[in-house]
Length: 90
Image 1 (cartoon, rainbow, N blue to C red):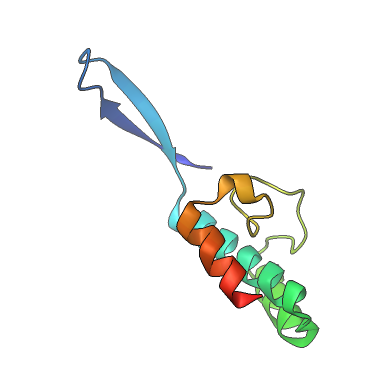
Image 2: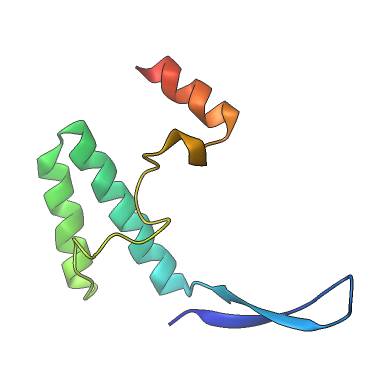
């Protein structure tokens, strides 16, 4: 469950709440991104090791896709620098 952090607005002085991932959630999200990267590279042996670690932590390896969990697929979401780096790698 994400933590809710109060944030004061500079413009009107009101208080809003941002949802911030807990350390455990951030770790699981990072492992899912790592596993997705290995699968795109064809390194299924390493992806299986990461999946085993996810299972050990009690998180399914293949949940429904969530925003921010996987690699960026749509270039519209990337910055110009990220697009340039991707082009160089290909």
